[in-house]
Structures are given as C-alpha cells and as structure tokens.
Length: 347
Image 1 (tube, one colour):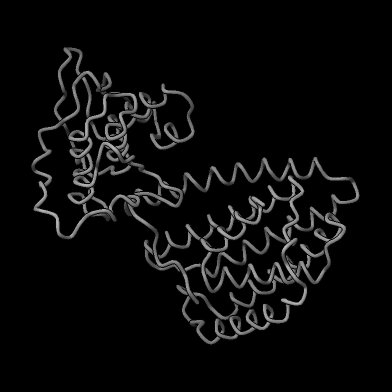
Image 2 (cartoon, rainbow, N blue to C red):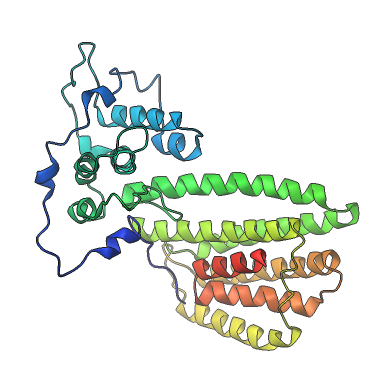
C-alpha cells in the first residue's frame, strides 16, 4: 500500500537549486548579519509569566501588528534582547535550541514583514536553525522574488518545526470543522438531522479507527501519519462544504462502476492483512479489520444521508463514490484523495 513516506521540506524553492551552479557561500558568510538592535525587544522578560507562541501569533493573528508581536516573541525565545542602554544583550544558552523561533525570524526578514526585507539577515537565521534540512542550501536559495514560508500546508522545515507546524495546521482545521459541522446542521431540514448526526458519528468513529493504520515508531513516520490525518480532516471539510453548498458529490459517478471499485477494495484489504505485522509499533491485522468495519459503517451513513439530501441520487452511486475514494486513499495516498475531493467540491 502506497503511503506518503515524508512531506516536502522548506517549500518548492529548494528544488530550484542547480547542480551545475558555482560554489555557493557558506553559513560563515552570514554570521555577522545580526538583526539591528532597534528590532530587538526590550528585555529580558519572565518567559514563565509571559509565554508566547510565535507560530500562533503569526499564522492566526490579523493585521501587520502580528509581525512585530511574532518577532518580539521569537527574539525572546532565542535570547536576543535590547538592554535599557539600547545595546544588544549578550546571548546566553543555546541559540540553536529553538528552530521554530529562529525560522520565524528568517521568514520575517526574508519576506520584509514588519521589518525591511534583508536576505542576509534571513540567511543568518536560517543557518542557525539546525534541524533536518540543509541550512546552507536553504540560505543560498533565498531570493527576493520568492516567498519564504515556515509552515506550508502540510508542515514546516525540519523535524522540530514540522511537529509544531503540523499541530498548528491541525488546530486550524479542527476549528474549521467544528464551525462547518454546526453550519451544516443548522441548514438542514428537521427530518435530515438524524441522518447527518449518523454520518458525523460514523465519520468520527472511522477517523479514530483509521488513525491506527498510520505509520509510527520514528519521528519521521509519526509526522507522516500526522500529515495523512490532516489530509483526511481536510477531505471531510471539503465534503461538509459541498453539503452546505448543495453540490452533488456523486453527479459524475455511475452505479455500474461499483463492482470494479469493490473488487479493488477487497484486494487491497486482503493485501493489508497479509502485510500486517505482529508488533505493537506497526499496523496489525486487527487494526486493519477495525478500520475496515468502521469505514463500511461510514459508507452506509453516506448512502443514507446522500440519497435523502440529493433526491435524484441512488444508493449505488454513493457506494461507488465512497468506495472509489477509499481506494484512492489506500492505494494513491491521502493527498490524492484530498485533491479529488477538492476538485469535486469546486464543481
């Protein structure tokens, strides 16, 4: 079964590096390019009394003021302050210990957000963020015409940053799901409420059972599993959006395709059972069985709700549609599943 083994790091600009390029400057080149003292917060502050989270401030805040707040938070996290005399305070501790904060500073200076754009200062901080990516390549890849993003749609720039960014994205999607589920429920006729509750409950049970199928055992595998869970939550969000907009998800699905989809589903299930391991750090046969049973209940819930909500649709269409998406998820990956649903919801 194909699974996304890991996700893209730093963003696509790293892929633009030419193998035939001349020797690039090393990180030592950018060591002197510290941020101006005027950009530093007054401090030090009692971090226990005033905790902050630069990622939340930046990505969930609104307006330009969030750039300054995120910058102050990041500087405090790495121990850079402005003294009462307007001088730079001596650094203490390990400045490489917080790559999330360090890359926040790199992003702000690379994009010119709240400060004048300065790629050399951005490179200075990229080189300090010792995580999973190659800092010198990343620093050399910064360009005035390309945006630097610490947290992309599926994560961030390295081991520690990926965890932080994935948790941030998961919280955002969870909040969006809660809001969308309430909107859908409030928009339905009374007779459809029980069917939607049944669908929502079946989805939650499937998601819980499905999580056991995710890879685990190492930090990279855990992150891969987190990314897949994020895709599945976004897929459910797309389905809710389609319900709210009354876009018939099965309009292009033929009932006759169910036999082929069901055959592929059964073949994948048998293969999963054969590949299942007997250790507690990988997916067992019972976990696959539990996920399959939960998914069948979820498919049945879609049949009940879908045929009641879209009167001209048939149970066979919904079974074929749901089975196709399960096959895509298991054999092509959750990212492909999300792409298909996004395209279908946009029609």
